[in-house]
Image (tube, rainbow, N blue to C red; front, top):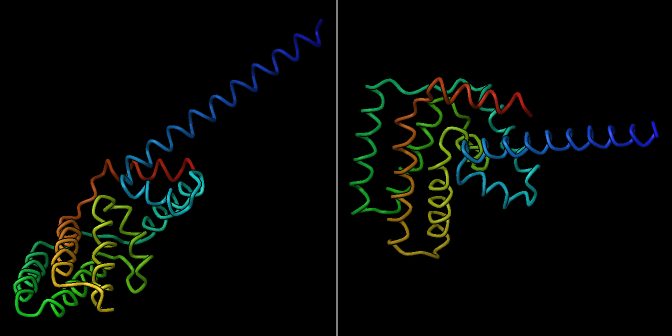
Length: 192
């Protein structure tokens, strides 16, 4: 009789542990989905498995924590915004050059804010931590610009690329990670 009772207690404890682990995983997934938005789904598609995608997202957040990401001073933001507007105005006369300059200006802003640049995939990953809602614009702008460089698109696609670049550019210029967002990211990383 004692053995049956003991087996029952062990079974209840195991079920309770499994429930706690399941709830913790569900909460972690929910927080990551909230933090990364559409980039969470993109990671799921890329990795094909939720746990692998979530590990990668947590790793991105840890890598960004090691960087010294900083908002630009107001005067510098204004200067870069003026350069952006000049680049945008140039689009009418020379769309190909304007797209190249838009990308160059975007990379300059990333670098000045503290993001490493040079490898597109790494830029996407790191930007996704603070800019999950607009990083897909960068991905799409690059795709459209590359299609144009290979002669597979028209000026309309370049116009779309410019719009996509602008979405991330504006988001980068307004970078201001609040204390609350910073605390939430650290909680996610410590749970991993």
